[in-house]
Length: 598
Image (tube, rainbow, N blue to C red; front, side):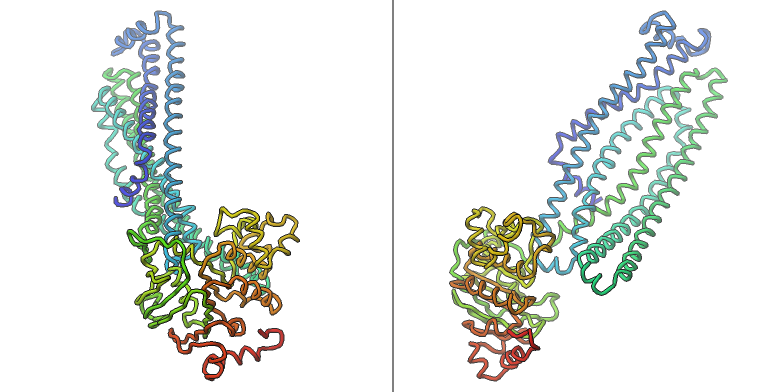
């Protein structure tokens, strides 16, 4: 019930639409309950012989309201069927519109909340989760709320009201016949509960397997160049087929459960109908019950069984929806382990001083990536960070914009502990250029302006010029309005890097973090990129992680990281003279095969 209680909270902002929908729904149900009566009065008030038992009141009613002429009576009774159906349909149309609109509004709100939660969660969550699974929760699991509202609340309300008034009218007509007809109800309810538990378990399994299928699809298509380059198409198709077969098996299991449940419940309802026919026929033959009443009773029993069947299907749909909603709430309930403090300060314009005080960090709480880092970087300094793979270089950079919080120690910017600052104001003081520049599937203009949405075209153009990107942008057919493709696929690696550097120029932040910005470039492109970066670094505090020793050899200071600690520190020349690890790294870079020199 916890899942359903929490789901109801999403409906509360739309209570007035729900209330209005309930009113229209009641009107629709009322006119539907009137539909059987024209048939009763047609049979008992016109077609039955005047001396037939129990028809006197019906004949008086018809004569009073529909006149004395049989043809007129028949016409008006037939018209009343159309009128009841039309007016009831109008009420039903209005209620369905309101319920559908409210369900879609709830879906939009839930999707937005999940998407916002995913954006607010720290990188540690995203590192441990598949992006395709998160996308599946936003796009597909979220649809469960519409099921809960439209198939849950709306259907349960309408079916319950119909059941209540249907049974009340049936009891008024003949209470014995009513009791005989509803003898099967306990068995129906037990069957619904039995199958509902199975449906919930199987629905959860389907959603997990569908998410897995989406994941391998996304992964295979995003790496299509590599797949084709290595001739692994058949292997990827086999992998996909295996996942698809698991999804097929889970879907078959759920659908067979639904089919079996329909068979059981349909048989039980047929048994109740058979009891009604047998008992009711004997009552008519014994002149205890008018034929018109039996016909009305039969129609009401159909009305009774229809909402019961709806409720059974709703119960199974709700169990499946509960599984989807639970996956949505898992995201919404995720604890942010990089929280923003209440009353956190804003930093308006940083100078660029950075300090690490005895900083230690671990991703899993077991193996330390950084151990007791002490470091002071003055505003405007350029600091290169080198060392072997897996020694915490990129992690060190990630602590400055507070993508992660240290396990111990503090990171400070201009003397402020970064955990005391608002994330937005802190990150507004930092520009980041990564090894693989991330571009969105939009225009070059919008990608450059991503960190400064209000920038003028002149400012964007000037940033592109400083990044040495203006020439290639102007050579494109649509210039700055050219589409870059998915993840910048229409541009070369060097062009993407220049766009990333232009983005940093435009942001004009005092702190610059560079993570392997030239490692994927050829020597010629690298030199051009480094010229652009040199211009970007002027007057900015710069931390640059790289394996290309030559790119940082002339920096103000170089740090050598090993086993999570700073083991060497100094200028490039002083470190060379010391003959330590830096010297070995430098010499190794000088003796790369031809074509890979710095």
